[in-house]
Amino acid sequence: MSVGARERGTVKREVFRLEVCRACGSNKLLLFLQLGPTPAPNGFLKAHHRHQAEKFYPLDVCFCQDCGLVQLAHVVSPQIMFKNYVYIPSTSETMRNHFAGLALDAIKKTAAKEDDLVIDIGSNDGTLLKSFKAHKMKILGVDPAENLVKKANKEGVNTMCALFTNKLAKEIKKKYGKARIITGTNVVAHVHDLNDFLEGINALLSDEGLFICEFPYLIGLLEGIEFDTIYQEHLSYFSISPFNRLLKRHGLTLIDVQRLPVHGGSVRVFVSKKSLPQSMRVKNLLKLEEKKKILKQETYLKFRKKVDKVRHELVQLLWTLRIKNKSIVGYGASAKGNIILNYCRIGPETLDYIVDSISYKQGKFTPGMHIPIFPESKLLEDQPDYTLLLAWNFADEIIKKQSEYRKRGGKFILALPKLTIV
Ligand SMILES: [Zn+2]
Image 1 (cartoon, rainbow, N blue to C red):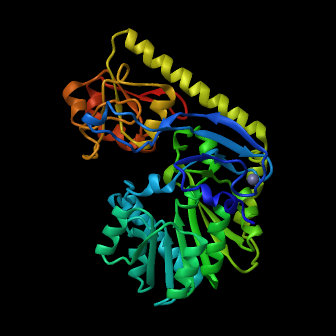
Image 2 (image 1 turned 180 degrees about the vertical axis):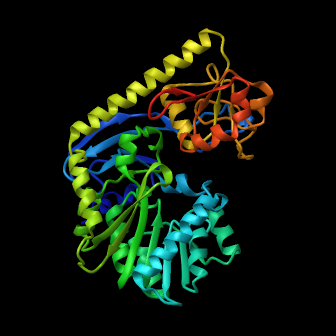
Image 3 (image 1 turned 90 degrees about the vertical axis):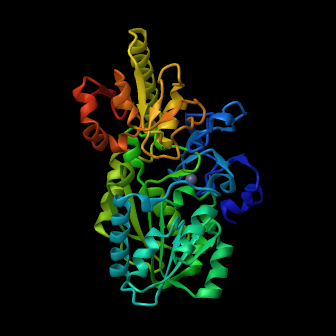
């Protein structure tokens, strides 16, 4: 019986605690980091909602001492997390180019032909599938976010509104046949029942086909102290070793892996139903993980200490500046930023406001800490002394864009991976 099967009946609850590792079923879970209680990091509030009770969820991170999977100890129901999902990749040119490259790579590796079926799990607004459609492949998207599915179908990307499960995979197979290519970008990290998910992949993938997925790479998270990428919707934080083991248990083979620069360091993995030899790149990454002690608990206890240090140093700096009557604001009302603010308990008493270029966030308040959000133009209007960068993944871009602010004496504070003032 799969691990998830035991808990499948409970997924309907709003939030529940994991008893065993979601990959291997072991109960040897080491709790090494507690970032919560934290609200949903994309739950921006309108002014009149600020006085209503917000929902906070625990954010506890565990390491499985048997298979090495790093995972959250609590699962918030995907119905709550993904029903109205805000991340739309087509808004970013970097992501559009990234997806076009992924489609080409996938077609080349599978020798897919016109009219072969490609299925994208977690297809969002259909950006990736449009790249496959341009190569005349048959496409099908699966995504649980109603708003995005509507948009995709309107734009001619055939998309089902559902969570991908083994049951759904069998229904799809009946209707459309097996797929030559199955893709999933930033989706396996969101899946609670990994075993059921992979059974579904196994049922739906053709023997010559490939399952290609991308997810943030744990080594990037550990080395960059990117604790702000840990939030409720990311249930697993994969390294290659536990992923490799998990696939083997389902008769699947990890044949190749590429490291990618997106999202603070990700990997693209290629999975086959045939037992083909693993590439040198897979072997090299497995060796690297051994060298970096990815399967040792001491690595995670050290990581916790580093996260604590980031919080202490950041809070101390901000308080020192406030005592000296310096004005401080934030830049980038991102999900990552909200995790930092909630974990460090930085609120409007410290940051006067946050500026952000995305218009639907402007005029709202950050979840949990309730800091008001304004357009970027306010930065030059007010010329605050310091600006805390909450979107470090865009740091270079933002600092370049705001050269006038710096010319007039404004300074940027970077919290990760090391506290720096620019
Ligand atoms: Zn495990």
